[in-house]
Image 1: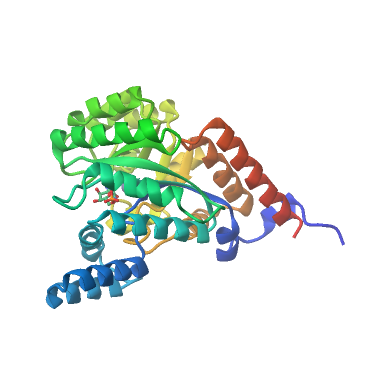
Image 2: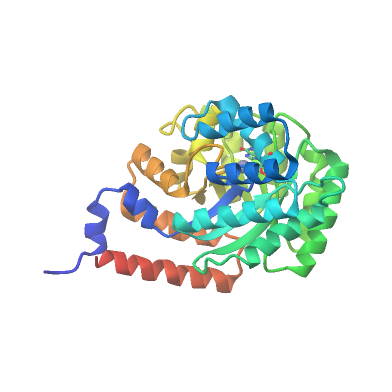
Length: 361
Ligand code: IMP
Ligand code: ZN
């Protein structure tokens, strides 16, 4: 009996098991949105036992956490607030980071760029300590299978003063951990704040050697998209409303394609938030079909009850992709990471070894 070949592999159906086994790269995951129900509950119990606080608040939080797979959109957004209320000490940020790393590793992710907006809590934690707690958690992560890097986020509704405070903390931490802290992200409610307030901080970070990713066009905003593309970040998040069919224009779409900037695509997040009508009508297919660099991502796996394997499965299902196409998409994602060239080559070797093994099984 001959061993299976790549051609045979192409004919096989994509399945949940295949997507879970597929080695993957996760480049767009927000720490507090990625917390699982289990982690939220453990952090809540820890905080409750330390503070002995009001049961009514806890009952509401428990009810939302409890919903698990079936959350309304409103509950999705309430979860950010709940997560934030539970990650208010360096110990909680540390645990949250370690749990999220383990869950991604268990899902077959071999490389993770985890991002978070550092928060200060008066008398308890500074932004620098928040970042340090994440750095410590990454460095002490016991799962040898996954390589993890940190990106720091600026929240576009928090204003310039907060952004420059965060920038100072990031630059100091980056000078101490240049290989681990790799990038700066601009995120937050797209209806709030103005991009131009944050461009100086992003430029400063770029000059200091950090890579830049910007959440772009989650809602129609042609002026902002122009400015983002002119800034030429290293990656873009979402780019939902750039195609002329989805609230953008032909001119902006061409500008995006000509930029060749890789786009982080989070299908479930967009569908659950209602910015994309459905998985089938997601702009993924318009980028994929012209071979624009894309990487599938979860955004907030806890809030949206998803995993990176599920994102691969849902994308394959809704757009009729083969196993080989998923392999190529996962492999090419390595080129869009903010890892060193040496790390990228090591990752590619690992991916190809796993592929060879699965081809002969
Ligand atoms: P954190 O930065 O670890 O606290 O993760 C949660 C934060 O990420 C939210 O408060 C938002 O600022 C940001 N975020 C998560 N998902 C999205 C999104 O889909 N669009 C814009 N910002 C987001
Ligand atoms: Zn995001």
